Length: 389
Image 1 (cartoon, helix red, strand yellow):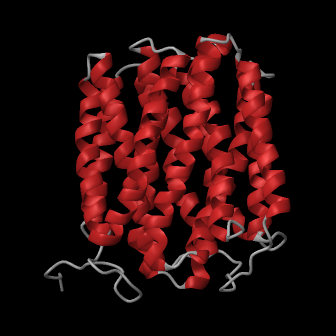
Image 2 (cartoon, one colour):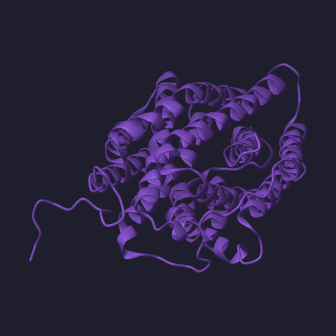
Image 3 (cartoon, one colour):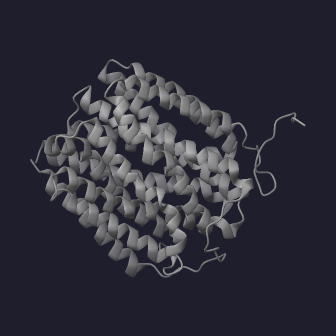
């Protein structure tokens, strides 16, 4: 019963999350302690990390050679290799190299995972299954952050060993998945050329703003904890641990709520919450309040699966693989620029960085109100009550 597409996606999601979570939990402290990174270097590293995401549209060309299922396995292997090598290259350019290698696997995998999920899972189950994928990944993250916390605080394990274990386990899970699961049939043949359809414009816009806004959280919220409040690597791992304990419980429920109340309402709640949270980041003065904001931030981002289920409802099924690559590229247009640009702004005013995040969330809110109550082919956008002639 476990040799089903859903469990294949879950296992690879666990492998990707395990490796990436260790990399993420250690990154800021590893970069500061071993390579003397400032906001400028961390911004450059994060911009380099997002370049493979910007190039995710090339997925469609890789699929001319590899089946999507095989491509998913290859991607996890690259991710695991990049993470395993990180501890052996503790320098500015070494970090840049291993980050790009890890990121190639990371971004290609999540492009293919999104495509396969929307192809293999029925529409009425998609939000719930995505919630289960998120919950399973959170369990893997719990293990990863526990490993970092216990290893560094109690066992004296160094960065090099932790990176090697995380990457090595991901590689072992790839081997297991490759031999255990059968080759699943492709239900709808996918178009293997680049395409952008005008009727998907709202999905593209929501995806673009999601990528821009999320960079503020990924790059600078964690950096705030280390630079302003002096969090150690073990503290950061514990914070991630709490986030994912909550997500294991909340993600499946959020998926079911999206199925019940619709994508429009879910996204509206998410963006109102994020406006308040980013404004809070801008003026926070205590470590305790920063922790509360960080946990709420992570919880609200779980609602972003509504963007994907909205697209599944409006899409031609044959467009899913190609559009998955294009959407990841759109998601990363701003992501390539924002970390390095806002890294410079950070040197003068962290407050401005987070207020910009609040403005991005406000734009996303306005876009979310255009999502129809019942999206579908021919009903992609909710129009205003009047139109200019």
